[in-house]
Length: 446
Image 1: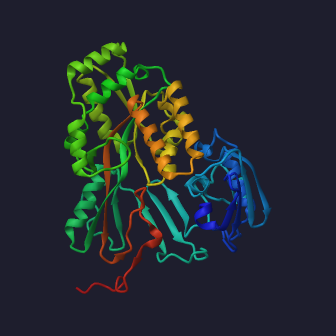
Image 2: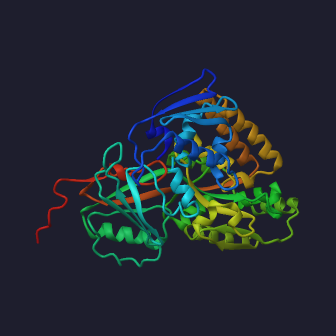
Image 3: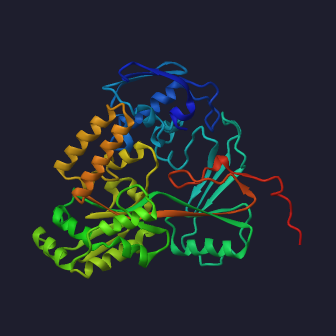
């Protein structure tokens, strides 16, 4: 369970936002039955901060100078310098509080069998299925649902689920084409199904790897690829959940998308050839790594590049491998999608973690961005912070370090008896809010 959003009932800080004291709520139980204490908070944040090679999100708390438990329900934290985003960092998923003894006993397997304090507890996690069950002792009250089963159908043939269970909610989010066809077939088969289409801040990204020597090291080569990859054509030819060309993280209206497309530089083969020549490109193979979800986009880019004499080698890897940049094969660029919530922290994650944008920055750009972001934490005015983040995004686009490709949508279908269906900004269902109407369990008359 995340610290600030649920565990602390009050807190105070010094005038300069450097010293913080948090008072925990009473009777917050972990899923294994023990009450959460200040010691668990100290352990959870310290293990993140002290192990940057193990946890990509350790940057969030590297500014902690001291942390300690004053008593069983009081935590005191002293920072090296003012941080006006500290509360937001404590509310981020990596700041989830875990039970010290369980982690120490099974550190290597804890990720597959986590124990927390949330409204649902994990009872099964293996290939193709994740099962959550309600946690009756949750401090905010038991959720309405007894059980949530998350099933993944990447390879099902259309129609294989002929009579959908009325208790189901089906989502198409970065899904394979067959899974999307399955969802559409189920909805067409019955008038009892409702569609919920959501545009959220998710876009496909091509991230160049500056830590690897290759043609991608030259800005003119990256600029040539930027011109070569026609975003409108990707949307037109691949369709699916691809809806607009992306000019950055955030989605925008079709009218704005049209204006942006009109002002965008048009592909010109002569210009592309000139940029490639200026970069000193000698026909080297560009190595691209992606997941099976994004393979259609990768193959499209591969064919597009080859039409201009740029051979592209595509490697498909499992999504979990992208959590650690070091586990991936040698590559010149990564292709994946990112869902950006409305919070500043999700954008900072992209800029400050090795498994996201950090490898895309050469030494000079990395230094410039680091200075911008260091100043951002010390800025009290949110509107000024937004301007600083906009400057960082502009720098990245100016250097063509990352290419923003297309904006995505999520499609959710649910039976009319399911109530409270809503989509979190990150694209997931909010299971705690889902419930069934009073007649939902009544048998259907023949």
